[in-house]
Image (cartoon, rainbow, N blue to C red; front, side, top):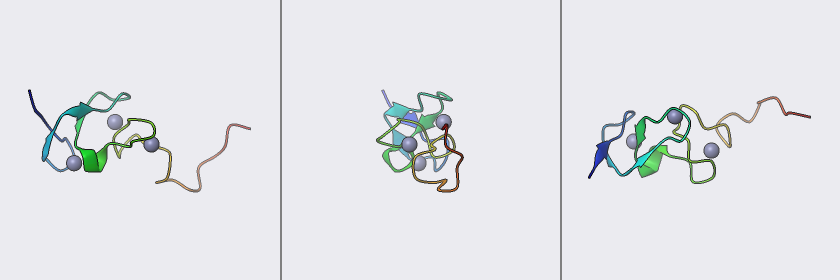
Length: 51
Ligand SMILES: [Zn+2]
Ligand SMILES: [Zn+2]
Ligand SMILES: [Zn+2]
């Protein structure tokens, strides 16, 4: 069973745990398992910290 990445339309086998859209390996973060649209690990260096 294969999905299609919602970002680049490449075949994927994973989904974002946050928005549950399909995301390929290039667009799914290995740290938080969110897609590029939802990941807050590295993409947004200026993000606010919780404390
Ligand atoms: Zn992709
Ligand atoms: Zn997502
Ligand atoms: Zn992430």
